[in-house]
Length: 112
Image 1 (tube, rainbow, N blue to C red):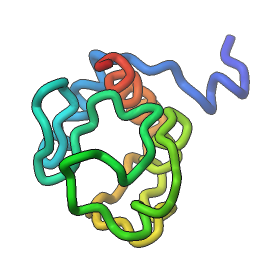
Image 2: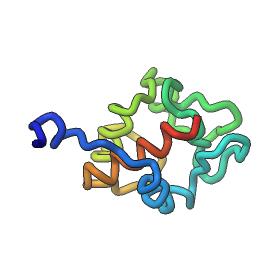
Image 3: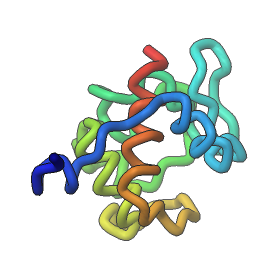
Image 4: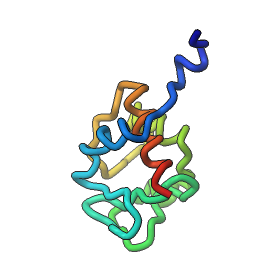
């Protein structure tokens, strides 16, 4: 039986998350060694300070100064509401479906 907490935070599936990530691949690579594309590499994103990826020079000044550290919870919040990061240079409408966000996060967690 699902609890209120489990309904709010679904378990992610990395295989499904790979499919969700397909749209992100237009600008981001998540695999080790691929480097940057139109957006920064997302390899091992969790624990990294936002706006500080070496070799990627197109972060907004706000993000560079934010001091935010990417966690699964922060990424989930941002994927749900991209406007939460003021002045982001990224054009992204968000992912309203909580399960799709959980799957995408599981996929990125899998690539360490």
